[in-house]
Length: 265
Image (cartoon, rainbow, N blue to C red; front, side):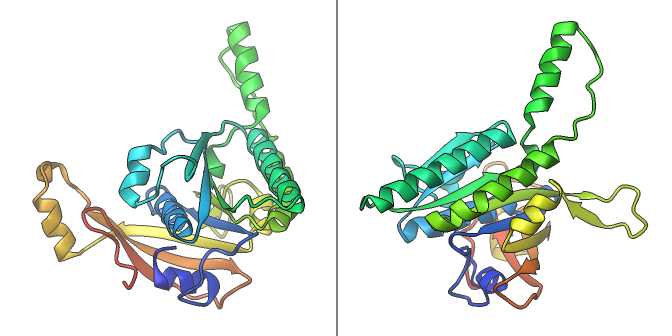
């Protein structure tokens, strides 16, 4: 992952990390470092010969952002594909797995691949798109409730989990968490229903707070827009709410904005 302590949190070893051929879920509120950790893992994967396929449902992943984190975007080292619906992502992942398995069975060296799905929470259902189109045609104003998206996500993980394992392709799924509505116990829950919850080998719960780091703050003060800077980085807290690889322990690390992250922190 680019952080030894988060490696240990996920896999039980500081030299481990994201498991191959399995689903790893990174979930948390907005701004807690989920996409950064996913991209950081892609960078480390490229050092080991992986090609990156980044499925972007938020239209926010840019070459400049990837370059800043250190992910190579040269050629097919990293392919960013914008995805709109859950079914579109399902078809793409299945077709990719089938192509990889077929090529390997025929003796072709297709290399190693890592997939990031960022994020589950922003992937629409086909019904949502069809409903909006229908309302626009009718000049309506109310969008009917959609209960198909959760079913689509559950179906997606049912059909891609085994092909990912057969193709030995790790999938990092980024997911949002939401406050429980109408619950006596309160707290938060991940979006997408039970599909992502049961399919993941590791589910890493993440949260973020303001980073206090003198060297990073000094570098921020020397930047051109120092007066506009409100936060120079985040301190991230990670806890594996589900893990088949490690003993669950809370760990903390840092994502500084104005200096390179230190893997030993």
